[in-house]
Length: 409
Image 1 (cartoon, helix red, strand yellow):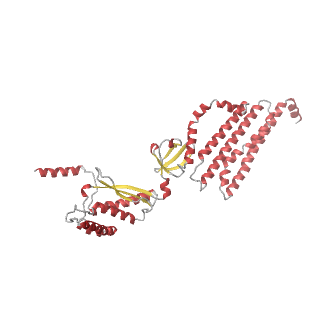
Image 2: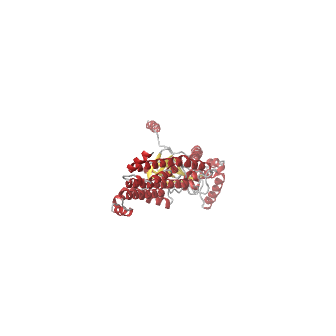
């Protein structure tokens, strides 16, 4: 030991290197103690608590980054023992501390966003885009501080120099700036929330919003594919948000059945007697018969001819039947628009449009209700001696041609 001591006195540089090596070993041991004992103890304690807040905030990833602070600080305090390059290594260690601080800040921001998203009150008003902007600002200032430490310049001097690069920075961060402005519009006007069903035709999106970030909005289509839309792009075009329908608890049924014009006619006594037996319109038939009889009598109408005076038609009676039928259904919402209307006739016949709201927003139930309604319409329409319009097929044309040949003969 005396000889070793004399050797160190003769070569003091080696003595300092050995001391520094011991400090590095101590720093490494402190890291192991912090990570293996203290952090594991905190992690186990967090898991035992009933609340989930500490599970999110004091997560293992965050604690492992914090564990790096103590060994870096220990080495930094004794960097003067190095004979050469102590200033450079000291600057590097300071930069490492800033990097750890930036990473930990980012993890804390992510934990805050996760807590916010788990809140029942604000679960559909994401702030992820704003927090990502905060993270970018933290990263920028962290980078400026590191450059200042390594170059020996003050941060304000670096910021002054960056002012000349504003145009380049705007060009580089153009998408970020546009997305940030779009995020403000989306949040301020409550345009889109997580869980909303939206349609964006130009991007092939038709499904539920699963994530709203600074740069992108993720939509999971009903076929389980995922569409990623740039945040600022969604405001450049048009999109449809079905949230109003979901909040109202009702979904619109808007579909038409096309009636063949040649099947429309007045009701004679035979049809009137037949329709009186339809329970849904018995009262309507009796009321209209009385009303028409009084009108025709008052105006001295010759009722022996159908075209004289007022008459009921099979298509008008059919519309009244549809109204009564839809009102009798418990799955049709009575508090919303309720229409059974006749639209402008065209080459495909006379459209009779059903415009009502189903008492559900569930897609499968909605389709079942709609199908049940039109199944009934297709089945009952012949009872009113009406025909649904269909384009003639090749077989129909051949049958007409054969009739024409027989008539010519």
